[in-house]
Image (cartoon, rainbow, N blue to C red):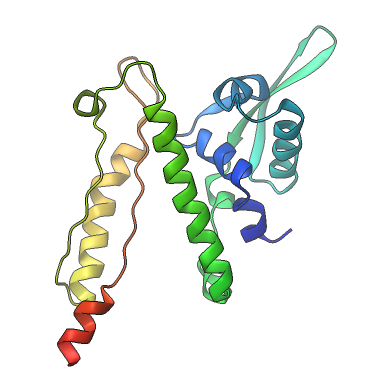
Length: 182
């Protein structure tokens, strides 16, 4: 199965997201987090991700005659490669972006469904900013951003730490380009 088809399925996308932050989970732990996904469906999607080497088994233990496996995300395998990205059709990019946006909306809905929410305490935010950057400045910006993120992405789970999801979108503003040339 193509990596685009594999990773952009809504349930598999949520499974991959659950493992972000170098987490390890059993299928029962995953089921507890994705309680709205029927267990049979969850097990089938986990099996597909294991078969594609996106998830790896890091531990096994016997429980009442069955084997419970603990999985971890193979980060490199859970991404669409730059080569594949370059060959995706416009329709595949639309589907990929729609899956991404649907994931953002679903995450926000789950947050809003909590019993107790506090936007400030929880660090919830969504913003938009426009920057005038040439290609070199934009490349430098991305390098700076990665420099800020890289050490934090390496953080291990620890008491007092909350796993936070950061999503980014970078797009050129066609209206700005048109007004420059016009």
